[in-house]
Amino acid sequence: MKTITAQKSFEEILEVLERTERVYIVGCGTCATMCQTGGEAQVLQMKERLEQAGKIVTGWMVIPTACDDLTKEALGEQAEGINQAQGILVMACAFGVQTVVSWTDKPVCPALNTLFIGKEDVPYQFSEVCIQCGECILGWTAGICPVTSCTKGLLNGPCGGTKKGGKCEIDKEKDCAWVLIYQRLESQDRLDLMRKYKRPKDYRVVKRPGRIKLSEDLLKRSF
Ligand code: SF4
Ligand code: SF4
Image (tube, rainbow, N blue to C red; front, side, top):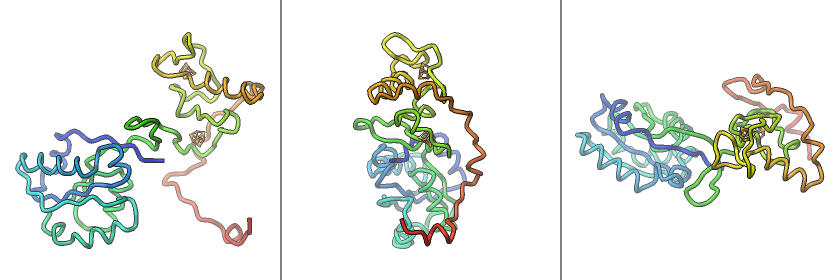
């Protein structure tokens, strides 16, 4: 599972850095490198563009995994360049950005938009697998998530508009999620589950901000 990101427009980055003349750039060696949004090549490209725009880049690094606790040590090792900067531009997902925020008093700006948690289907092609809805129904849908796979997010499908060849009526390039669910249930001899009614999701299951503390009982329990 990876966090899929897209780079913000350079205009937006410049706007957020309006009052920051000296910038330190942080990239991420994991998800953002895979998405080609915050790896070494993109960090160096950003450095060049910022310098062309009149900024002073006091240093840069690509942290192996920006959302990891080791980020604290990495920032410490680069203290000289960071201290010279008025702000830090982070080319990582929002988790990486917030990790950097927790270990510095400097203003921190994201260079990326965090799109979704997904997987790499084939090189450089990503798809969303789960929005962490808090009420997983994969047991009824042959392991295919309709919340993310169906264009309308229908829990009880199909919608009735499925095109010839099993394509989605909204996105004709994409297979209808409910056709895939049907086919998989059929191959498992569980087609009766297509008639199982899935009640509307209760999004209050996960209160924001999502937090959980394991009880003492649970921690003591042996599995
Ligand atoms: S139903 Fe889909 S979105 Fe909800 S938890 Fe399961 S996989 Fe994730
Ligand atoms: S055609 Fe299939 S995937 Fe598309 S919206 Fe309807 S049920 Fe969902």
